[in-house]
Amino acid sequence: MAERKPSDRLAILAYHSIDETGSVVSVSPRRFADHMNAIAEADFRAVTLADAEEHRASSGKWPDRAVVITFDDAFSNVHELALPVLQEHGFTATVFVINDYIDSANEWERSPPGLGRQTTMNEAQLAALATEGWEIGAHTKTHPDLRELSDAQLEEQIVGSRTDLEQRLGRSVESFAYPYGMFDQRAERIAADHYRAACTTRLQRAGSDTRSRLPRIDTYYVRDQAMMRRLLLGQLDGYLTIRRWARAIRPTKRREPISD
Ligand SMILES: [Zn+2]
Image (cartoon, rainbow, N blue to C red; front, side, top):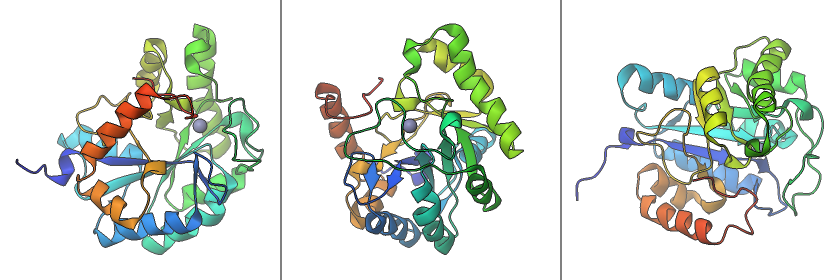
């Protein structure tokens, strides 16, 4: 069987909170450091989602030996614990911010049990990440399930979040992540019109996927350094397919029911 070249596919990693609670959206600081070591040792580099998509749009393929690191919900622990590790490796990342929960905590509906109260970054911390070369992306204003909204509400959540973030941070916002990975045709159309790239939670590496529906690897499934290495080298694709099927059959315990 012919091996795919790494640049045929791109691993877009999805992290939420870096903490010790063991919740379904948590990765421990130790495991996070192991993941980043694996990326460095495989001689991969981290690029932002917007840069990866721009590269694909102009060249027709994903950047070579690259990975995209994303953080949903903009928890303070990302600034405190992930930033120093990424700095050590010279890595950048993309963080998806919920406007109404800047300098707040995870008090939106359906925050997963077991995570406890986790605070979120303030504007100064977000600005500091941007200064480090991180991409600041949008993740709606209030973290709703987009499928339940009216057309006007969708516009406000998807476009309004972008406008508001751009005003607050003085930078352009080009990427979007659907809360819970959930969207419908209306939401996808608006995201495609207003963003360079939009992420789901479909569990696979990105290939020829449309830019408004990019899959991501939930790092909950990446247990250690060796597994991260196999993921980057394309040796985990079969395992991810099986996990995806299992999630489709039994999604009840997951906080982010699959959308596809
Ligand atoms: Zn989220």
